[in-house]
Amino acid sequence: MSEWTPEKISEEILNAKNVLKGIIHRTPLDLSSTFSKMTKAKVYMKLENLQKTGAFKVRGAYYRIWKIADKDKAKGVVAASAGNHAQGVAYSSSRMKLKATIVMPETAPIAKIDAVRGYGAEVVLHGRVYDEADEKAHEIAERTGATYVHPFDDPYIIAGQGTIGAEIEEQLGGLPDIVVIQIGGGGLASGIASWFKSRHGSKVKIIGVEPAYAPKFTESLNAGKPVKVNAMPGLMDGLVTKKPGNLTYDLLSQLLDDIVTVNDIEVARAIFLLLERAKILAEGAGAAGLAALLEGKIGDIEGKKVVTIISGGNIDLTKLSKIVEYELVKEEKVVRLQGLVPDSPGWLNRVIEVLAKAKFNIIDIKHDRLVPFVEPGWALVEVVAEAPSRNIVEGVIKELNNIGLPFKLAVTP
Image (cartoon, rainbow, N blue to C red):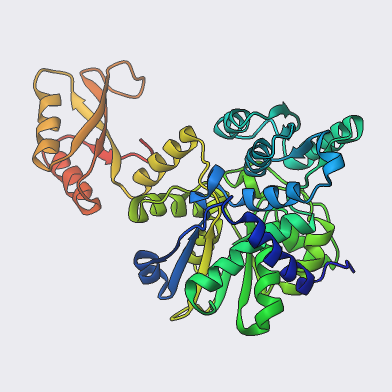
């Protein structure tokens, strides 16, 4: 059992709060009418995507580096991260004028790699997931004498992240009933849970959320000890680790009331809805807690004050565009119609006239005579278009069929 109890972490959070004053943003706690209606709860979002560097990680990184002894600061710092911890360490080191070396997995988003370099840190790409990058970071620390800054398994990192819990309580002017916290290595959840549980006990429930393809805490809690799992890269890259930290496992095994998993399809929907309804940009890891809420995985939340952490907004724009396209197709706001038309003048125009009358906005048209399964004298036509509403699509297909054109809704655009 570690000497770092939830009570001791909670006291350290108060010190971290003072150190971070004027360094970080006190991010908004937003009551979402949209998500409250969807879940029948009072859903508050702690918007750490609006934090400096675009994620909560700067809180713990700055506080940990601030705690380094003066005699060790000249050798700099080294860290391993999929992205947000990297930016937090790079930004904090820059503010304190220290050299920083960051080891990032080869799968890290380009936007995060570029951002880390933009803060002046040296970037080393190594491994497919965080754990492999972490091994390399330890090698560099041992060789150079730089201070290794762990992304989660460090009491000062945990205390820095735990300042979010203190802010939530102040901003609510009271206590939430439930706090839903995504879990990568567990630093964020350990800090927030230590704050609420050490001070208010069972009055506040703490629910952890992790990727279904990297369920290290789920498996470890079931086993009664930290265990390594097979972790795959995915949309929630910031939550993908193979094994809990020793300290974070020790804390969360005491503090979590429950833990659930979400998949990338569920998280993609949460990202899309955040952008469409709330005008909030979140990355995969940042939207995992909200995804669990929207999918009804948290249990009885009706009428309760529920806080979820939008922990980061550093999403790669190419990945975001794919998510938006995927969700637009799933909701039939963008559709692909596929059918056959006689290969003679005027018939393609008749298709366009039907779509125009129904207020479809055509994005792309493909007209192909050279398809083996299409009879001579006919052509395969595919139309990608924005549909004014889902219920109109079926009527348009029916109208095309009625004039002798066998069209159907294709699966993807």
